[in-house]
Image 1: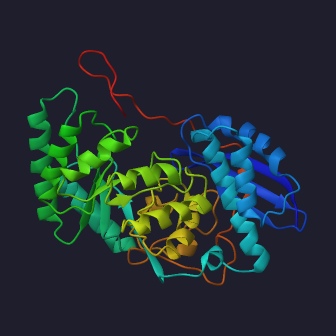
Image 2: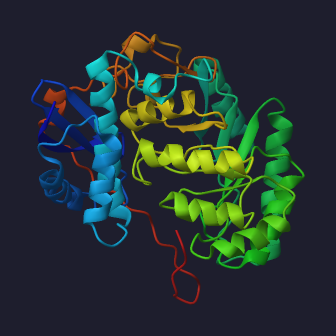
Length: 392
């Protein structure tokens, strides 16, 4: 079997851009993958075209060889866009390999260690606690979600005195947890805090409410700072969405910088690298809760990783188009995202495996992808009262 073509598609999932990749073979087997959308997404198709020249004619089932070739030919370690492109190629190679054998991808990983995969849902607006309660109750009734992630910030952290930031968070979380005694909450600070002492104070405030985890309060660049941070916290510390390889995760774990790691399978270079990262974490007794704000194809890739990962904890999940706007318990067949015809949807808060479906177990609608449906999206940069910018 030989690689004969690579096709990339600009599309969207609700309000976010997505870049999908199809790799074709001379035996008529096509594999699919998804890039991470770091921001300059339109830079990815020409980059993917360039990488195709390096893998054309290769046997797609030699995944380790092909990934080594892509990494070694780059001469210097690839950055965000390079690894996003390589991740999608990796996904497609696994899909091809499993389809060629007529088995799910997880069978190539040693089989499953669990029967289903637990997921949590982000609540991105997080308004009044009563509204959060009602939203979570609706999601529990429709899909069985029992875990959610929110921002801990209730006021502008740049404009308000720090004591008000802490008080507003403490009052809000106390009301929230009292209203939702049977719900687990995680809190994501999105790397917005520059000073570690603030991250310590906020984390230990949240510790009194026993959250699922406290995610990425500070920037990722100084890995040693994470070890000092964790040593002062009384709450499970989670991070990793901004790290790129097993070497960075090894450093983080050697520093004792995380209780839970959150690599992204569309960021680190794909499933192969994700498995290596998880194996290192397992040796440190650290679980993996993959970062996954992506589309339904990326969720399928994550599902197969999680099903075969011994130290998997919980998966971030984003309801696809259709399901996101109809939480009325409709059957899975009645829901359809724009480009994945049969997305994985939760039941009782878990994603079920599809042992009778080869590859990733989903069907891509190529007709839909033939029209460029790209939508521009970028984060809003906060402006401090003195006119300087903050992290977003």
